[in-house]
Length: 257
Ligand SMILES: [Fe+2]
Image (cartoon, rainbow, N blue to C red; front, side):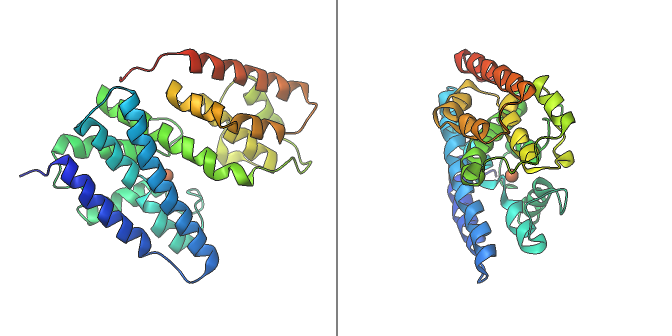
């Protein structure tokens, strides 16, 4: 017997709320990090629902996206508590950690096999540099939905931490890649300004016009651009290129595929 997706979402939401609370900690800094991920989780669930409805999905097809949003960062709680960092390179891949928890707890084992596969694929790929070759179109679509929902909220979470340039500047190879519209390797980040540039370049990785419009409306791009080193012709060229890309994406039409 397989479980109805709607029932599964209710069960998983109750489980997840309980699970996240179980990582609460008396140390204020840990508590803050856990609460941040708790709130992020619930917002990503909401964005995954909104985006999939925007794409014309309904019923179980929307619930599938909500389940992914709910579970995508389940690995974060163990990760932070053990390693005191959200940096995967300095600890463990949090998507892998999360999938292990999902398997150990049998969280989705009552779902139809195909749903399990789609959910696991999206969660595994939500934090990778690029989406791995997908087994089919539907898996790819859900991976794209989850990445966009996640990214939209990451911009929100990071906003208060974006600060003006500390004067160290951007590494030359990062500037070159930015001007060329290419992604930078974030394991090579050397300065605070490098980090800001990488965040700005996530824009190139947004899949849907729906997401891009929200990123634009909320002025996340402008806020980062204002905090980049000023008066550098190469950086300005990269910003110009990025703005054109954003405009094009906003004017494109989203399709559920
Ligand atoms: Fe994540």
